[in-house]
Length: 343
Ligand code: LMR
Image (cartoon, rainbow, N blue to C red):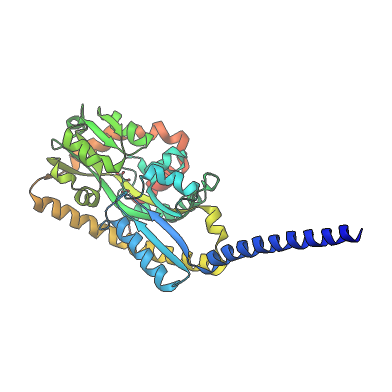
């Protein structure tokens, strides 16, 4: 009996000791991660000297100043770590903590952001900003939390232009051309509407596709065309400003909610400050890209007359009707109204 008791005592002490050791190890591990800086991995696909590349770097710089020792940011530009598509999965699975994919690419998850792809809906970045700040825009930030994406802010790149083998003064010039587009059904419909052949393709593949003739044409911003050197492999850009390219700056909601409150509050403030800074910079970065493309002498830039621009608007307008049910007539009307406001 005594022996049994002793045995029990001995066994339970041994078990207790093992448990304590295991606990100590666990606590040690937890302590290490709680004491060490929180790591935010932030992959994106454009070059560092683009509106998004600069915004991501500025975010890192400000975070590491104001949350020194508590939060570290690793920015991976130029699709070094992963493509946009992979980053959407990577964020959901906690492989990365922050992304800024173009709004067009969210079409894979939800039709809610399709409004940003409607051709000629947003005449300029100011109009986009008004819409993004409106209840319609703000609602979008939290609209895909169930897909593990919490939007914190919007960042601009800029307005898109058409690049290809010929000047495209009118939509007829685009007919029959194979266009690389982002992974968006609205963009697909837009190209079909002008008689083109749309090819959805990752950003990192576009240069080679233009070079080898896998596609003839593409649409993108001045800054993306310059920094990814599309001007080397396309003879013409037509300045249509027909669509908007911008980003949802998003985090994984579980990661975000797991942060200490003061860190989350500070990161939120930093994201908003960096967004204002980056959105102010985006136009000049694009205009500089435009100038450098012209200066390269490798791509000829064609500006449209107002009549030519109207012919493009009219040709593409049926795309709005195709998507007005999935987007909703009210947000489209609101965006259109912002575009006609003068001030
Ligand atoms: C594209 O694929 O053309 C863009 O989404 C690239 C970018 O992130 O600006």
